[in-house]
Image: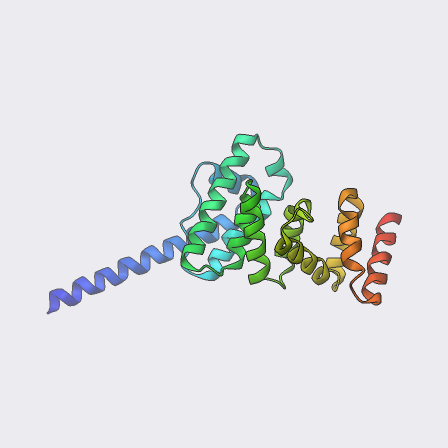
Length: 214
């Protein structure tokens, strides 16, 4: 009986140690410099899927942050592909555990190159996280080129994200900057905002004017 208790205690301690190590590695990864994160992802040294949703979210946010950064953009295509592959693996592992984990859908979308994968992940991301600005911005950055290409669920998701972001000062600033920098996407933004209340339209136009004077 005593031997059984000792064995169970040992197993419990081993499990706790493994859990702590995984969570610690994930936390250290999320707080590393962008170049260190990119190198780890490219070398296949990304942390194992954390057990806690908080740590898992941090790892996924880190993927999205580096993929949008200047340091990533300056890397050779092969390294960028390796980073995307590692982020895809993390997101896929997270979705196996929880199919409604919104951040995982967002990073799966962000890391994908196949149009159908991008579109499907975008819709799932917007469905599971309609009110999170960082995810809405990633969806618009990746998805606006697909607007009007025959996937009505994508069009609806992108319009919903524009409608959500225009309601906050930070969101309006981001939309106004996107409007200024991406001429081809202006008609989509304008058409969507025409469906919003007049006060939101006016606030957006004021933001565009403000940025134009800077």
